[in-house]
Image 1 (cartoon, one colour):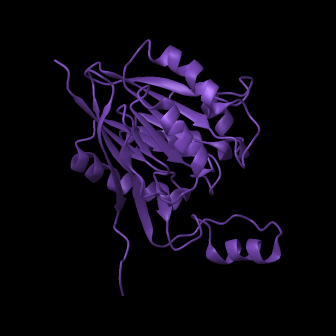
Image 2 (image 1 turned 135 degrees about the vertical axis):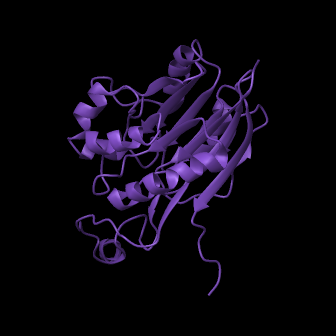
Length: 268
């Protein structure tokens, strides 16, 4: 008998301070949403750039089923052996295939239900890599042969490109969830053909910051227009993401609910 699958997606985790908070809150979040599948974007965990085997193991030991990344994964060479050896740590599918790792994975849950995870990266304001739209179509032809339920992490900078991807994949996947820009957007919706969509799932990390970076360093970059070492901030740490409920029979989404924990202050 077909049933709904509860999927918890944690947005871009920044720094070890963000990782610690995700690990601390994850049991409560899994209980809150009755989550059966947990996906985490971990591209910014190691000093804001990349991921290593140590952090990946901590997430998997905590119950995470799949880790997605993004363009910053290549800035930490420790990530390359991890990508080569761990099929459920993904990098964007549309990078040249000579790079280590893979861009999609099909999770088999303890009850034998399956769900695909695909990561694609945008090109606007980013690298001139393969077309994300055509790459998504090619990958989905393989993934959909194994499962009807598919979550897409679209790691992109331009909101318009993300929205276009949502419309392009509407009805073909269960969810298109934007990452990379670290600010949770207010446009979570179920598109007409049944795909859950949000332009950005938000950042899991320190909010007394500029997108996770220490404020003084970020401000110097804007004022001086020169490079300054990226330093992860430490205060006001929150976990951000979305909960998606997927109909197993059709692969379409029943609901999408963004969350931020703890909630931000709204007044003084």
